[in-house]
Length: 92
Image 1 (tube, rainbow, N blue to C red):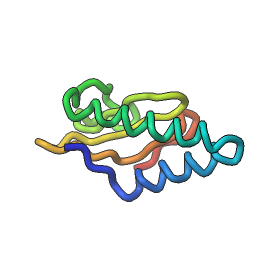
Image 2: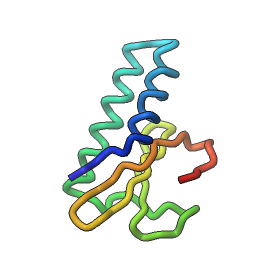
Image 3: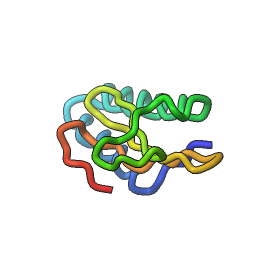
């Protein structure tokens, strides 16, 4: 099961807000594609690579556009921790 943290939900809203200044259509599309990418994790949880800055095998990332979807594996659950821009310094 994929579970979004409140922090990750806030990140997604911020991404939408930022992109929607130029195009609500593309903002909706990007958010939808990010959500779809996280759904893949339910069947393929190890598809992402270990986050280099953290070095913990349970914290991984997948990329989409210029964003990093950071997630944590926890037995039967996958927690989406944050959505970070690739140029952004990662802090969890």
